[in-house]
Image (cartoon, rainbow, N blue to C red; front, top):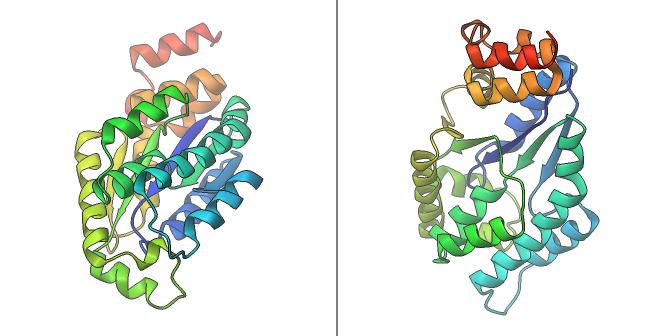
Length: 239
């Protein structure tokens, strides 16, 4: 069974994204699905070089617009080289941050206009996630966790900065209810939330049916199995 889907995990530093990505990828793989995990910036040879440059400490003032352009250089390469080819093959791609992160960090955190980022994303024709999961964590707790490791340039930002970023993420969650879920750090795993969204979201169910036909039926909620649009999609595939 192959179901194409791009899922991103979002959140400030120390929120536990890596753990949730590992749990979710293992769950999908047990269902026989192929999962590709990527990170941003990075994920390609060029992207990783950009990541090193982006996170390296410097005495220069790092203009937020420069950050956006570096991020989108990496993102375009990742989309062309990894994401789109794997989606075309029917695989699931899970990203450690993606489109929403730039809006949260560079727009809400550093004052770049949201419309500018949206314009670049559209003009570069970059994929958008089918589902984004926001891992909510208190900025104070985030600060405590990253203090236990050698911080990179972004991790050295102020507590006030991360509070602005967190507020930006919450606004995105409010304005993108079809795709962004807010998962409290201390209330279980994101896996349960993603599983429910995967099973009960009609658009995702339709995408699954259109991708693999009848094989998708055991992955979606029973309430959707008799939906007229779902049945029509099955009929078009000869089922």
